[in-house]
Image (cartoon, rainbow, N blue to C red):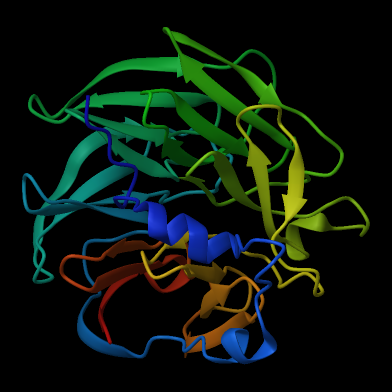
Length: 303
């Protein structure tokens, strides 16, 4: 079974991202200094038909970009959220492709399914039929956010308000991790044998504005930080680039950044508030960035 969660992963990317070197050959300061952040050239900008867009993902098989739109408040059970379909060249194809959602945020692709978080539910959408198959709801309060798919077919979903990570497998959505070190997790991505998340650690009054990258082992749920520097803000996206780095955003400040372990974060673009969950297509070297508060989807060519 072939699963894609926003980007295909290569073993070399995992090695570079986590700086896995042998004790006999430690990574040198010179090697770290050679890391060069990519440059971006804007390809197009869609400014109509989107209403508080949060996440974008490209479906190569169908040549379409899916974009979630909150419309209302992020925690409002109002039924006015939707998912739009946009062309790879920036034209709105179907504004109200999937409707009746509350505040859809993260999305991920898995075979013929699109998985979307919607406050208290993981929504399963049939891509061929273009309709919701089922809402997999959690018990109790929830604020589900980003979604990522494991190669084994299981789905991981962050809860950014109640500091949990859920796993959907065998038809059941249940808490996979609840740990004081992982506070208010937002972006998440399966990378190799770990789940990489943007999360605070509970050492501040508002860990949602003091997130950094942490990796959680699937084998034993051991947690490690990817950078010992200070937290990097209200981090949202976690999107690998297949070069050993990660594209990320700071929702509050509107920064679009590039992170590499050992080098930290580099500012790529200063956007408007609400720069959110991005998608990078390595084959095309395209980066798609929703900007929530400005109602935009921006496409960049990555050099």
